[in-house]
Image: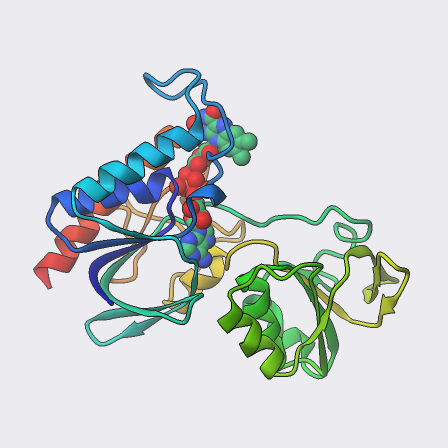
Length: 293
Ligand SMILES: Cc1cc2nc3c(=O)[nH]c(=O)nc-3n(C[C@H](O)[C@H](O)[C@H](O)COP(=O)(O)OP(=O)(O)OC[C@H]3O[C@@H](n4cnc5c(N)ncnc54)[C@H](O)[C@@H]3O)c2cc1C
């Protein structure tokens, strides 16, 4: 699959970017899951002209609008991105590949928490939300990956290349089958249970499960969402700031040629109006970049 502009994220920022990019006649592809947008379950109070409207309806209507201008929408998460000749190659959870001249990062912010005892206390001392960032700290150590979706599968697979043992804790499997096969084929051990407590002293020593079993691990990776924007951005050389935001200039450029970003991922305030405004800027500039190349 080829595109001029590929947008990672099907929230308001990504959809607005798609509208502006496709109207500039760039071949535009939007990836992501609309129901994972922060605005999806909400009722809006402070968005211009839309008081009391639902986030879900706003997104559905925005998606239709983007399609009407020629954008293609694919409800799939991106697992990895890399630079390639003439642009970028994205790998999707189904195993599909997309080649794109320009990229727009609009994945929102999603460091979902488990909210179990020990999670907060041991954050940075064995608890991590980013396998790609922290994998190297767990060489030859046992780890647990927690999560049911493709992101967790991808992290479990990654960690088999570093850790001495990888437990993948998932009560139900919601990951794409292709990703599940990859993780289990690489040697991750699936544990179909619910995590209860992260145990430790100065650092993590174990993960207690709902039935009282304790997995003896030194690392607990909490991977409850899609692959985080920060990880994906790093794949193409965009370094997030310490809070995980991608800094952009006034054109929504990231400093890496052909890579733009918009919405919550670029910083606060995390608000719809800002996301949509930046989406327009990023979409226009990504389309110009792709069409001039
Ligand atoms: C409870 C709540 C209430 C809110 N109420 C308001 C309000 O009243 N007014 C207001 O202005 N703002 C409100 N907000 C904030 C608003 O929702 C956000 O500012 C806005 O949704 C940001 O848009 P975005 O497109 O940047 O990110 P999001 O809307 O979060 O969309 C992110 C998209 O990226 C996708 N994605 C993530 N990772 C990947 C990946 N690896 N591959 C592919 N796709 C990926 C997701 O699936 C999703 O489609 C609220 C937020 C919350 C949580």
